[in-house]
Length: 131
Image 1 (cartoon, rainbow, N blue to C red):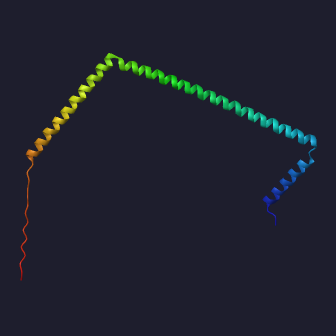
Image 2: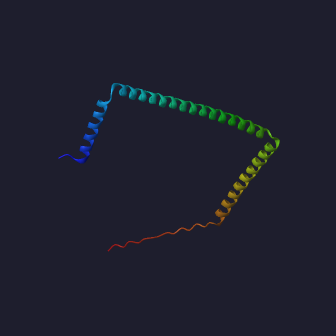
Image 3: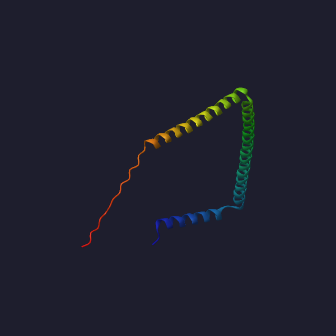
């Protein structure tokens, strides 16, 4: 017993076969030419799109390179600025002072806790009697 899907598929294949067989030689050649023209259009369009993407990527790469160079120049100029050097030295001195203060506070805390501690020792004695 044929199923509706099988019947439909069979009908489509039979119809396509009759349509192809019913085409004249001129129709077949025209269909072939149209197919070739479409394939060529797709190829040309794809190549053009690929070239555009490549050009855009190259331009982007050049822009990034130029921005990097500009940033490098700016950072170099900032590093040579006397006020920046002065601020860096002040920061360095402040961090050194802070480190010394933390070290001193740690020593002081350690000394205070060692004098306030008391040690408690508990001894337990167990006696065993024999009977």
